[in-house]
Length: 442
Image 1 (cartoon, one colour):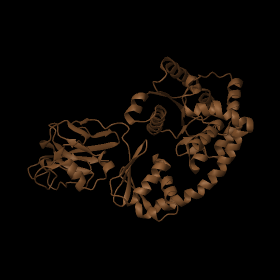
Image 2: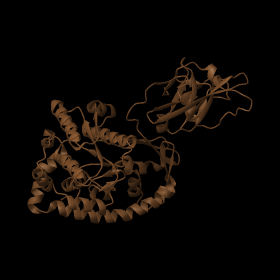
Image 3: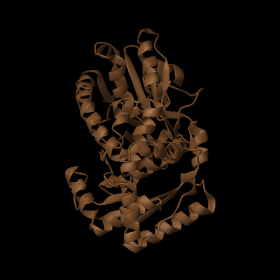
């Protein structure tokens, strides 16, 4: 089995022998095999374990088991404890969807901060078959029929060609211990019902069902490649990325063949369903402002374009920026500061991503927060107050981008800079200014 996995890794170009992987290990049979296989292949890796706070002492024991496993293999170990139910309620999503969002967001953050090459999960041949049938049950396009891909950006699945019984035989052969998750047998979850009640019947009809579905998935993948190229050509003409938003040109979309299908493929990375995509297409002729949501993103039909932004899965809070602090990095916002004594020849930087403020007019610590209804400021170059809500309308900021606007305030609550837009007149640099605080959005 080791040779087959190694050959699969090479054929699919999953990673190189020198890449260090982040391996997701729950403690269950599949992930224990994956960790042991990578160890025997001499592949560098670290282990990551998620504790979702859903199974009490049983989950605590899982975490301890995986911690000992990492010590056995002498690899770096990371664990995270999530408030999954609270997060699900906050975002209005299912517990399973919440757990998925939390773990993959954390995995990717770990991958980047620890300088790791890929995230490896223990999905295998039966998982791919279950995913394919579950997608078909719910209704799907070509993407759902190719099952689980061996490689998807930084996600890799080295065990994908291996059957479930082969994994079990490997555990027995190498005398490996693992943890059983009782929730895997719970009929509450749809995948479990499919696994326990439906698939046994289908395997009576076709004992080689997993392999058959794998071949079908490969054929569907070929058809999907043709569609993908057409969608890429459309995206090159109709889609653009700017700051934290994606824009789609409505007129260009209307010129495509099978507009709804093409748009759904463009929107699939953002989590929008085909049914919602149909509603979006129907809104093309409607007034601007219609709003559509996926579990992770928000789309607004603007005048001549669709504007897509990511939801803030963690609410932007209030943060402080002390005098002399050179950087602040929070919730996707990265600010850098420079304090200058004004001297002859000093040039004030210009641009939406930078603010030059009279440091002595400010009261520290500065406060960074999300804008709120009722906020007002005095836009530089203008006289008098202006409601921030009216200012954002004047700036033609799409509805869903307004949620991401933050302000930099003096300690007394006065807004000094609507970040990325306009400083306040009360804090502008004048001839009397002695010290200038430069704040840049990176």
